[in-house]
Image (tube, rainbow, N blue to C red):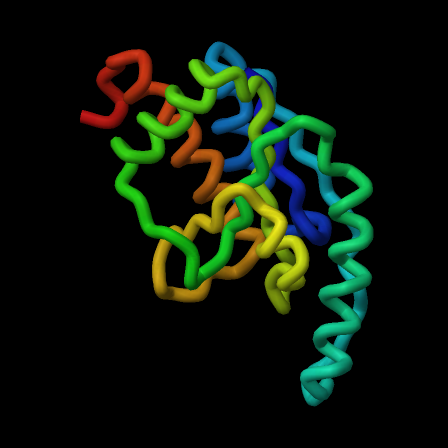
Length: 159
């Protein structure tokens, strides 16, 4: 299975880079992982809603260009569906059986994802009603991907 994470912005914090490198290494035996960073659009506090929408729209254009064709797209979105690790593992396993060989996860920038991306995704997934920094979400997602694959294979990491 191929898994692509499309994320807005570059990672800067060393601890995040190190954690992502560790989980990327662990995931090699489960999937072909690709992390694609798209440029974030500069903005400042005090932007109006319309200006914020323009920022998200520009980032969405960049994201759309790198989403592979015939992929199952999951947008990370706070009001999305919340699933347990076991439920997500079952869903990933089911997608593979149904012929989806490529899953793409979308992580927005500091302002989140544009509504057009959320609306066009196959699934909206929430990790929590809490707000996490978008760069930290990459690490959280990779840890969960590793957990989901170990559940699928019946390995002990999850238990």
